[in-house]
Image (cartoon, rainbow, N blue to C red; front, side, top):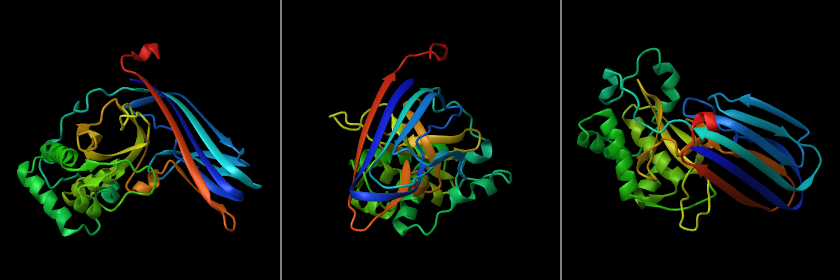
Length: 289
């Protein structure tokens, strides 16, 4: 599927401010699932210095530094990208990993430790995970599929285009949440079973609302021996394939924020507006892109 995206974010301040350093996570990754064809990012006011790099988890990031003052910061990215992965189940799970709790071999386990760390999950999270594990007879793929289906069918989805994800206990108690809330809950449940899981931010092919307004999207990925990192989307009740574009993936949601920065000024109020346009062509061959 061919994606053409324009993502415009504007911050307006009621008086001139000094902008601190900013981190942009707006460059889609290039891997076996997606191929970046064109990318451009414009920033106003123009940064005094800019650096492109990979962060600790392998995501492409851009760092910006500014001088002077401004009443507005505008960041516009333009993307042309081809997704390559129309079958989310094109792999065979390594035999030891077919049963839960998930075992990882000695070569992979150290690198996945941060993605497996469960913290201190609430008893209700642990109980739900155990219930789904029993229902799926402790089969790894059956567990992931059942978990995805239950979050999709039993939880009400809402749009909340600002603020960080809520904690998984609150999402579970309320029975509702935005896509990022369901992703965090999915991750918490997986980690109680030893499954390495991480948070992904990005775009999707289909709008969330009847009015077709576009929003950033979020979903979880799990690491499956024999399959690598594989995405699930509890908001849609499906495994992630060619209808999703990943911008950043990390063990914590805060490390995937598309724009992360600060400003300095006394008595300053800010407003943010986002305009996201996504066009897709569902049937395009790679040699036609």
